[in-house]
View (tube, rainbow, N blue to C red):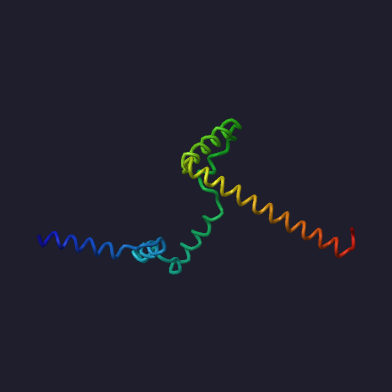
Length: 133
């Protein structure tokens, strides 16, 4: 029984020590890395020139893609990606769709009435200011 308690307490301690946000996880990962990987300020001159030389060159996978892709393959890939994205959509139920549609129609009607009222007021104000009949 004492082993069970130790395991439960150990599990509780793990939960308490677990980072709750992404930033905390990154910080925890950075603190657990070996000292050689943390910073590059302590590198020797030879290593720092080697890292700057490799910058600016394309990656090997880009070098290998010299051929052009046909228009039909591009369209096919586009359609496959569209279908994949549509599968991720959470579609509304019929009831929520009717509710949302009603809310949008009421809001648009109110805004049209408001803009029409402001337009009439401005028209009357301009007519009164410039003396047109």
